[in-house]
Length: 272
Image (tube, rainbow, N blue to C red; front, side, top):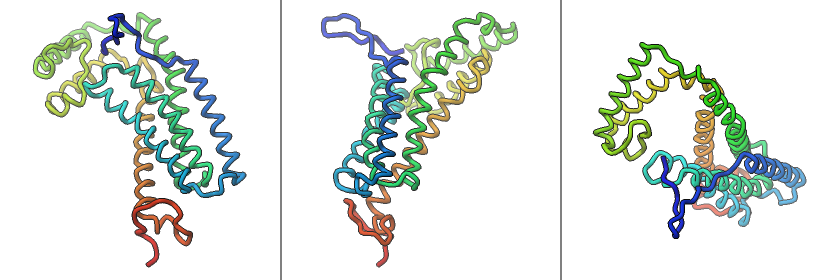
């Protein structure tokens, strides 16, 4: 649990949060940018050269902004995240700004190409992330906040839960002695310092969730959307790295029979 943020006068301040209405407005803005991108692309208004200096700079700026979600993921799993809501806000805003810069780069190229697939994957990430955050989180809240019977467990299950919690408490004395079992969640620091203990604790947490039936109550969409988002993000990140390496070091291969007009470091892969 993150501590409340304090102003310099000592008053408590609520960390910034992005409400559902603003997320939906952002989604509408992304849709408008997509339409403009398609118009520019099919009209050829940007000259058909996505590697032109200013468009290459736009792509670099967009790529750097799109690294913020990776930092958000790392911060969330480490002990350095003082305010998760701030990191989430940065995650959303940087992703949208990065999309705008990348759209300029894409508008001068071809959507139905290998780099274009990355653009479509980025679109999916943004739409899927916002829709899941707005609609599935509401469903999650309704299911966990309105049905007392959802939390009913048998006597045998209660006994097994007690054993799991006792094991977690014992492990916690070695992982984080000052932490509370009810609030503690291992992060990257614990995984690096105590890998085996962290793995054992994570397994106990998974067992505890299974016993109380949290995943079954939440439903399949609620249990899968986050995994899908992370998987798509990893695919996108891998694709971006391959694209950057290709145009920077394999410029000859990328250009084929065309002229290499963009900034690069090597022309490997071209005809000698």
